[in-house]
Length: 86
Image 1 (cartoon, rainbow, N blue to C red):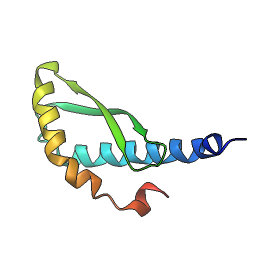
Image 2: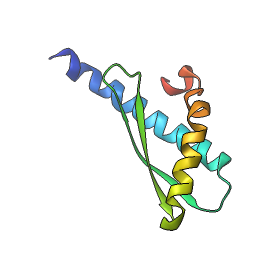
Image 3: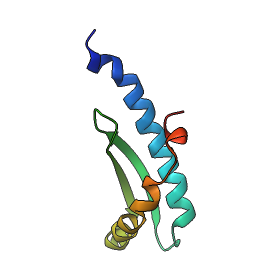
Image 4: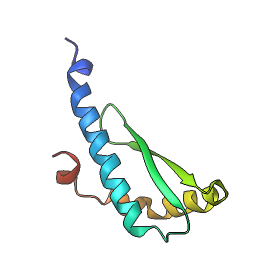
């Protein structure tokens, strides 16, 4: 079995943990003018980068929600590694 195949379960676990922790964080920090739902997360093969996918309701608030998410990126990246890799 190739190294990449061996790493798949770890990547899925890390992506799922980031998804859950991001959802909790955004739920706490959201100003409640829209509903933000974290729908998915992908991670790079080296686990150094993650992309979080969200949906926003109402759709008219999407631009504001993306701005909010971008402003909070630094705080999200501050989630301790021990929580992500548990």
